[in-house]
Length: 477
Image 1 (spheres, helix red, strand yellow):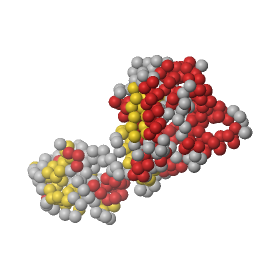
Image 2 (tube, one colour):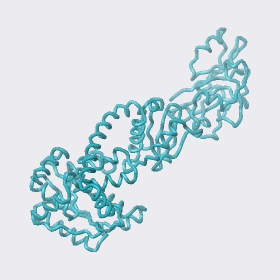
Image 3 (cartoon, helix red, strand yellow):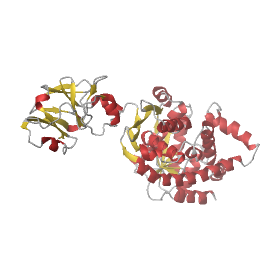
């Protein structure tokens, strides 16, 4: 019965075939030995991989024992010995976390070497119950309460090769019975009895206590995880379209979402889309806390004056105009190819026939002077925002290109000579706060003559009395 169920699980739930290699992680414990032997008997193409963490004195002998068993079955064996304690200290990780990370790194390195279809590990039903309980006690949403899956691609390790768990539906007693049947002797890891480890405390103390309330407790938790896993998968498929509808763009450092579309979503979908954005940038993040998600959603509904907050895992959340951004701490907010000054202190003179170069291939061009046509005021009305005409005789030459100054005012065209705080003008034009100090201004003396690409000043406008015109244009190379 064990082999029949293992074959069904491997083929149907893990999607394995008997032709391509499978990297099987084998520690020497009963679970991994049962997986190795069972898959071999069923005719799968196996490569046995063992990582010696060098934590316990007997680990070297265990590696030799696993090699001996693999050799006896005629299976390819690969192994490596590393100093996990030193790695944990260097990376500021717990011993458990460092061992896990190094183990999967090793297994997926082997998968690439052997062009494997999958990496198989021996997590079983009892492991599933413990995992779900750990997530529950720490606080988790549906993905956490769904536990582990039979097959999953984990981008942190490989974007194509899946991690599979053929034993996920088997209980520890079933595995022990199979090991006894085939006459194998597993290695005994005494650290599995150490209840200072959280998982061991659940296994040896909490779960036996809960079983006094309901002897079927483990089966109930496993069944719940299985149901939630199916429902979570269905919801994830449904949310794919929502994700695509909201998504503006992605890079290694940030995710941009449509802010207005995000606001129209129900709260459950908002949580799911925000979690997905975080997972895109932090694929190795195992738990995304409830508090972080709720704090993020509260900020999105009512952004702070700064427009940005710390979210989680060295990520920031920002609202910039109609764009919702999740980004790395060190990443700059995007400039969306806007024409910006090279830096906030930039200033450069500009005379007819000259050019000032800006970021992203933009430049401000001052064309040679021209005589004003009779209908110049009418022609000005037809210009696009990237071009402006000025009455040359009113300008103080040379002009200068600079950024804004604190507290300055100006007279936008069309306000009949009334002045306005320049910062209010930028806010009304929805120029993002992080771009305001870099927006190029063409100035006559100390006065703003043109907010490049947006609007000229009333002070220097072309009238019927204008004799000479200076044309300024914002061009992209």
